[in-house]
Length: 225
Image (cartoon, rainbow, N blue to C red; front, side):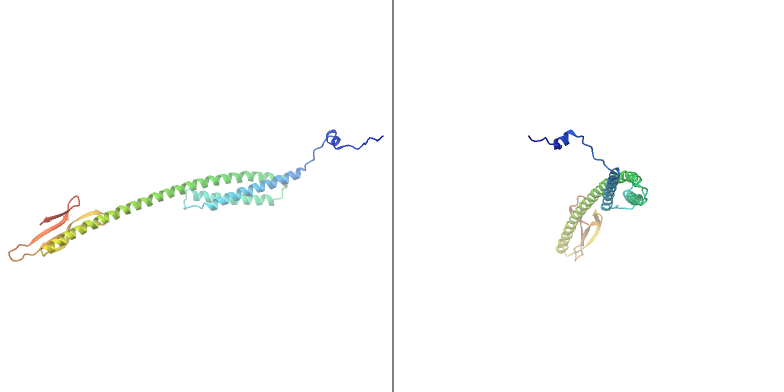
């Protein structure tokens, strides 16, 4: 007959005995929390720095609420945050004091990151609005330039017709032509001159003179003087 073993089985160990939880060293938790706070502050500061560097101010303005002034203030606060973190680490007041200080600085770092994100959004919207205004101004300049070019071609065509008509008359009557008044203004710096055609007296024939000009509707008109 075999003897009964008195050694405890695995089942008896797991279910028959009480399992005591492992004790956690509070010092380890404290060190881990300090590390987490430092990483969180570093991440927030890095994100803030990237946003400030990627969106520089576009103008100088004395208004403290202007994007350039806010950019300067946010940069100052970021530098102050990093300085406070360095001082807290070098103060040697113990891990509990360091954790408390870092917890406060983490809150400040997150708030600074949020403020910088708001600043960036406002600046981007202003830049978009400035871009829209520049685009509208460019289109207006292009439209004005096109209108002026069209008007200049109209001026050239009218002046050519006047000169051509006066030239034919001067050739026909053996006279001469010269530009004279009235002068018609089509636009700024765009004018059309009338042309007079004069034929000298020959023998018993009296001299003649005509004026090649424009009507009020800018049609070419030949008028006897």
